[in-house]
Length: 211
Image (cartoon, rainbow, N blue to C red; front, side):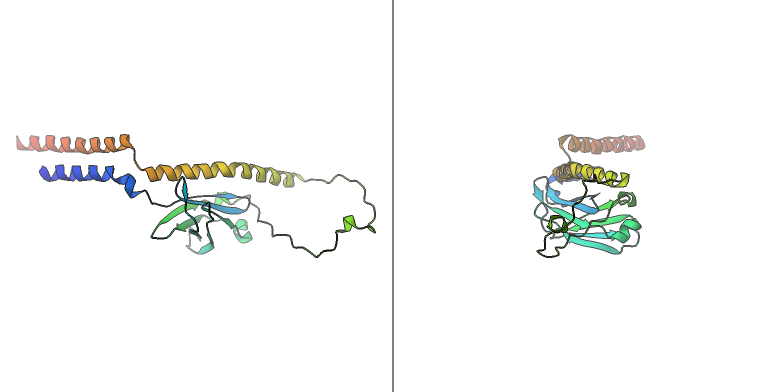
């Protein structure tokens, strides 16, 4: 009986000390936007994980696909290879923030579908002015450029992704803060009550056996 009570008190102490144990844990939240995998790495809402290494693996085979580092804001943006966009696969992301801090996040293959590869940066061809501004260029008719439905849909998707990106980052920060804070007073009291409830059941069963 005394041994069981001591175990209950020990578990109660562990529950009470959980927030301090989680104070320096790193958290990872990832999503796909504009042909990139965006990883939000942070220790808490106000403390991003700077220069943390982010590795993307094929969830099924474990093969490494991408690798990068987070910036000063704890954000890492990794361009999705065209072959992965053509054949979407489930992904497992791992962040290494030093001193043994590590976290994982999984993305389903459906998150990659419908994404377009990030276009390469346009290269400059020299100081020669464009033909449109050349004096010898023939006059062009003022025609209205046609926009296909697919191009319009992609443009709308890009606008929506840009608008939703801050909200996704805010959710990541809130998630990190909730994890770092650990269980609140209500959860701790509830856990202690649950432990002592087990103690009561144990005492009742033992008293019945002794009769």
